[in-house]
Amino acid sequence: MFVFRRRESGGESHYRVPLHPVTPALFALSRLWVLCSSLLDAGRGSVVGVAVLLAGTPLLFLRDLRPR
Image (cartoon, helix red, strand yellow):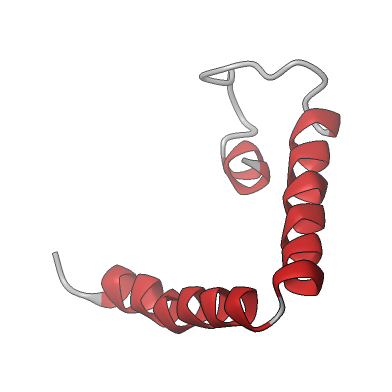
């Protein structure tokens, strides 16, 4: 959302978010808290899940590079 707002800063926004910079930042921080809590509590199982997620990240960039 932060990237979208920065790119579209010239005109009227397509949607409004109450307390814009605070609300998405609190959401992002809460997700970071859940990730850290999961890593500390579940240990190896959550590390495997994060590894699978990170392994798929390059595919997003490759998808953006393919010709349309």
